[in-house]
Length: 336
Image (cartoon, rainbow, N blue to C red; front, side, top):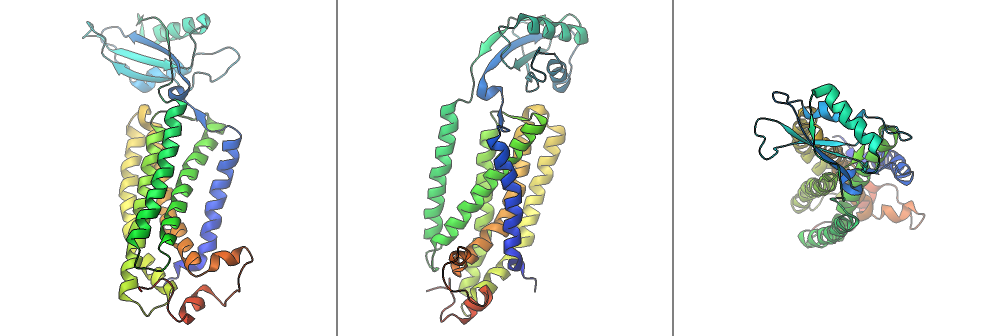
């Protein structure tokens, strides 16, 4: 039988090697907010009749406009199609850029670039707009994560109340949840630092979705552990958990793979407006699948078997986690 728990510290090391660089780049300011967080300038343009360029093409034109002293300043510009009232036969585009309201030269360069590519483009005046995602919204999202974490801890303690140390499972689920959030934030900080990738308004719901998926996947594994604890009351805790992991491994991987294939298709063909959202989900769900199997469950094991305090030099060191549970008078974590 495969012993998945044998390499639990290797799994933790892999997670650390992914999260640590991300934290460094977050500290270096790599997590760059987009226009939705900072505000900017809006311009609506009306294309000539018969001209219907793709959103990506218009975005490329806008992002290529030079900004003196700030190369790449318009790299996070966003474009969406709109219907201009009274102009049913012409396609309108709403262009949202960084704040260029006071820079007349850049405004003229932008209009000239659009006319060069698409002909007699009609434009409306530039107007400054505020951020759609303010500091208050971000703060509330963080508060929601904290409240959800406490609710998860209490719910899982109640759901696993027939097992010893039921709070262990809620705590392990929260650690896995935080792991996935840090992976998403860290990788976006790295991409922002090196490739100027910016997060937009869809990034916040993407992170919240990742949290939900992470907890769901972890509960699936823990629920199988709970079922097996009732069926195999005489087996060591280590063995029960390892068998439960093996039983749910295929299901977890298959479920995640179908979601990842769908998200990959969206990333390739869904357009630039949802690219950040889809990429965040891709990273988060991949991380969530990994953390549920290789972080949350091994963490619950070292917590239950008393291995966690020994990592910090406290307590006596037994022969092994397997021996510890097998030689106990009553297997740790079995039904009362």
